[in-house]
Image (cartoon, rainbow, N blue to C red; front, side):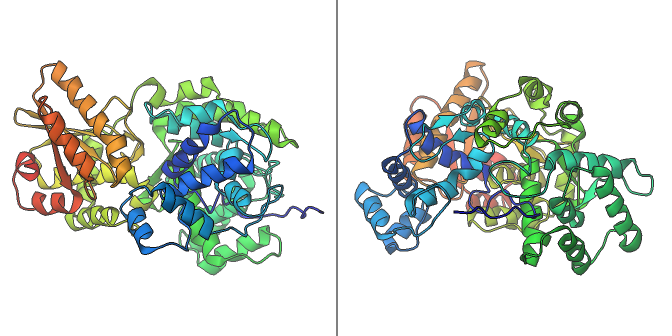
Length: 505
């Protein structure tokens, strides 16, 4: 079959797995088959496991199955087989059999393109060095390192995609921001979110030309060009194939900003209206520009995979998360406490509990589990200002979360009177809540008790799973106090009580 000619296209990494936590869940299941030959039988096993855990949810299912998925309860083996059989796939991807094998490829192709796992039908499955690093559950901070490594190398014109655009998006973004920030006519806040569509459609790696185009745009329209103006410029850079206007203006930029934030190199300014370089990571920015501004071209998918999947340890060593955890300062935290009204914090936490999207330009860019840590910290400080709050998430130069705390640390440490309170938060609600969270909560308590510190833990989630509650009762007999509270109850009580101890009793 004759391959379609390449075109100039706007950048979109994936429409299937946009969330890094979801990607890691998918990869964890697939990693069980590392080193084996990818057969349709293995495809079926992976698909069934994803269905069982609710990570992939076909449409034709019973209400009881929907209810289990909603409550994050795994399906039985019989239910899983039934759902799998009732939902044959008609999907077709190049070089994969029609049906579930092609559906499998839509799930995992972004992981292959970013260098995490190599696979083709009837070929050996191989997880790369970076793929294995990403799945290390004891080191969640690896996520930031792995994505910085991948996006420093990611090329638009790579063998996995038939596009004519030729640039490394992260490098084009950094160079364009630097040129804009050097220009004394501007405010030094980076590139406007309204200007990002131009970068996503840009044909080459000439940041100087992109900078001049943006300067011309600002001179004529300041920082408020109309949608029509942006679309006209974008379509002048693309082939004649019609695109969805809203995708170019909103969906693609949002996805791009989220991906670039995963590197830890990008900060948000001006209430989320501008994207700038995170000054805490200038060593990494300088390293990338020195070592990756000129990059090799690839015609072989395998060669590109090996290039992007190899970990550049020198790059990793420049990241502050590698050298020392860059936690939010008291000053940065206080800034956001003042920025957000209580009603906004409250509604955003309840949105997370109810799996609703955020309406805030800043918060919606922060991945949901990290967002809950951030908002919980703000909620405690807002309503209980006498409590000393020390979040352990890693932050940028604006104090916004970029990565989770290392596996040996609680999410948030609070000091109230003589008590140390370890606040742990999660959006998990079913079986996985207990499996992933309960044991780490106990480990964190053990570490503090060994040091002779009086401590108890507060566990906050949308809805506590019964096994989590049972475990809390079980470990209490050994002197570990784990107080469990749902998000809505936490919100209600923190509005009424005067201490964290009263809120969580």
